[in-house]
Length: 200
Image (cartoon, rainbow, N blue to C red; front, side):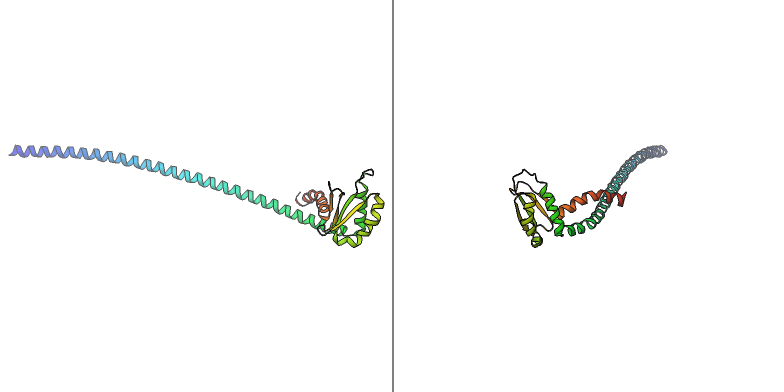
């Protein structure tokens, strides 16, 4: 009986010792696996954080670029608007006033018409503002043709607000000396000077 109890105790102790060793081994293995899982999870978390930082930096860079470009465009448009407003105020009213003066228009028409080649047989076609018909029609029909030695076909149109259009009667080409074209021409010379004066 003592031997049986001794054998049972021995088997129990061996089993307990083996079970304890196996348990510790399993526990160690589980710990190692847990550490690997934690390391992998940390690595993935670091990757996600790094990617999020990169995306945030890229987005910030893009937004900063867009804001800078929009600001530059706004400044340029504002400068151009100021420049155009100043040039328009300096040019539009004086040009319209000058081209509404019938004596000034007569001088310009005569000077331009006289520049047509003397030996050119083509008669001249002239389009003037309807608003100036009463003042200019007698001059054009009675005086201009005699002055330049050519036939002058004159029409008055509401589409010409100021100035005039002149060219050969056959309509092959024409020169526009309207208030808009005068203002544009003068403005093209004033704009660079105005820009330099305003913005350096």
